[in-house]
Length: 184
Image 1 (spheres, rainbow, N blue to C red):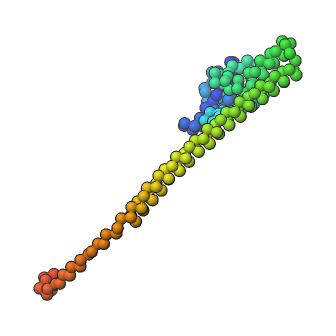
Image 2 (cartoon, rainbow, N blue to C red; image 1 turned 90 degrees about the vertical axis):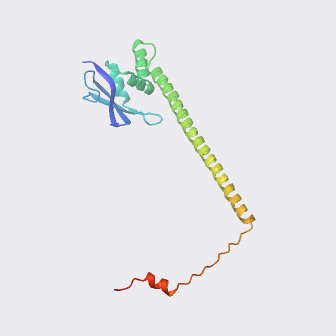
Image 3 (cartoon, rainbow, N blue to C red; image 1 turned 180 degrees about the vertical axis):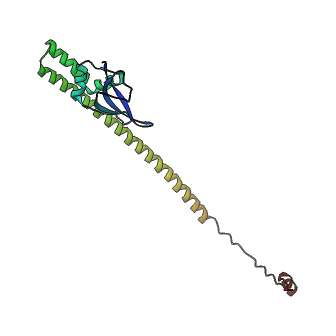
């Protein structure tokens, strides 16, 4: 049985959420799997990956083949690098202490990159908010100037007096009789 490490899609339409699973290569994408080893949410910025590191490493060591997307996820999480380092220990290139030191350096570098990305995103977001507020203040200032100009024009122009003539219309008794219906 050929085992693959792949993604099983979950979530609703236009909002994907994936389980990272070890499954038989003949099983359907969202079908039966051997073990769930993590989750992946690509819609978050940056993408959120929760992975059982030791189980993913186990499946790689017993021969499971990751798909292209899961390979990149495992590379970013350091699983493939750990497998590579374990190969070096088995061949006698270095010892376990060196492995741990190299892997810790990898994790520190990864953490710094993630922090840089998050800070860049937050600074861009703050800059966009400041720009939007500045534009809004400018529009408000223009409105205030237009209102002040209209008020100045209204107070500067002399008020024209409007004379309304009253017209008194007197009714004659004949007109009043025509308007009321006669009771017959």
